[in-house]
Length: 387
Image: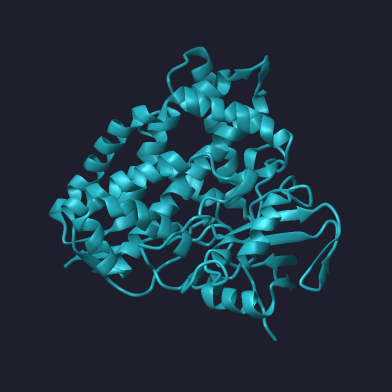
């Protein structure tokens, strides 16, 4: 009998064979392990994203949710509440003027990659990508320099699950509580002394007299820290993995850095770190002969949808010349990630700087330690050696 457990380490290690079975044989599947339905085909996942009135995010969007987030953040609200939050938060992004971050990001990339010139073997994540992405996050949000290591540690814990139970454990909840206290102190300081950073603009954003309240500013800040560390960090580590695993594609990118844009989009399709997100049904819904009932939870398997041959021919091939329009690497519909511009720009700049210093490399071994998270999928460590 077929099983699909999104909380198991085996699924983290390689979900794609199970995704194929789901798409071909069980496109609307009830998982006893997860106690939710699983949608795996591209068209079904996109339709669910578009139909937010039926597939609601208001009960939480992560497979295992942190306490107090549901119904209060961009990812855990539906329109019109979601639209109001997005407008105010988008206002802060516009005020920050992300174009002004281009040169600082380039400098951060060069600083992060410089030490690698002296090493034949290194951990791409620990020695490069995580240091770079956390520094970008600090530059954009205006977080105090010197706090990078502890903030990354807590943010990574926030998105993890207990490996045995699949639920949030005490250490994950404690990390979230620490992050809220940390964010609260930064917000208080920014309100007293505003700067040209996102936290200052969130705190002061106003449209027609409407402003984010205290809880909304706090949860927006903690969510963006979590997303900035894991979404950007996971995205970049997965891209590094793809570049190591597909040397012909990497050599094309080294020879022609403009191809990095296409390679990034193909990585977001082929090996997205944003694997699975949750919705809750507001009414009964029938799909592929199965009736899902009001109140049931539904897993939207982005990682499977991105490999659906009904959408993308030869989907298990990594092809940097592919037309990837519509991939779900950054979500979709009303819940398309707000940070797509800065994420794409940061990874392109960083990987070009990395290839300038380390143009030829390969993985040291074949086994990767995957982060225990039912929502996100990325390696905890990626050992590379120059070739």
